[in-house]
Amino acid sequence: MSSLASPRLTTLLSADQHARLMVCSRPVDLQEGTRLFEEGDPALRFWILRTGTVTLDVSVPGTRSAVIDTVNAGELLGWSWLFAPYRRHSGAEAMTRVRAYEFDAMAVRRMKNADPDLGSALGQLVGQTLARRLVSARVRLLDLYAPHGSGL
Image 1 (cartoon, one colour):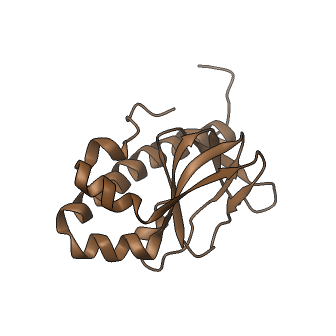
Image 2 (cartoon, rainbow, N blue to C red; image 1 turned 90 degrees about the vertical axis):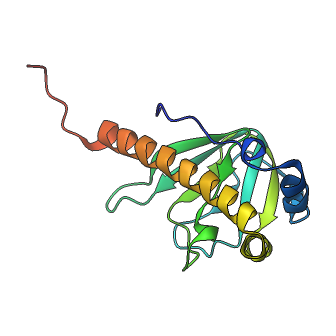
């Protein structure tokens, strides 16, 4: 696991921004084993997990997908919605029952474009999330695929 802290939406937004953003969301309840998205899918939604765990995986040619990170309660699931061409860079699966807020990505993009402060806060949330996920994915892939020697 990375040493970077997981960013929390409530710490980056004012109460007013948070309330306005929540208008673009709906609560969802996902059963264990639910696939939320696949690599290459359009990024039409993103989630803030309230409870549960979701794993992120990437395709590995010639073998099954590799799990590269875990998303837990309070964390952002999905960042591709913020950057054109708005396509997923991994797959995601609920490993437990998940309760989350699901956001309409297009509505949030319109809102962030109209409110530079909100846009900055969302950019910071996504940037911190990306930094943490990059470190986590690198460590996980090294664990899976780096040659393991018998020592010095």
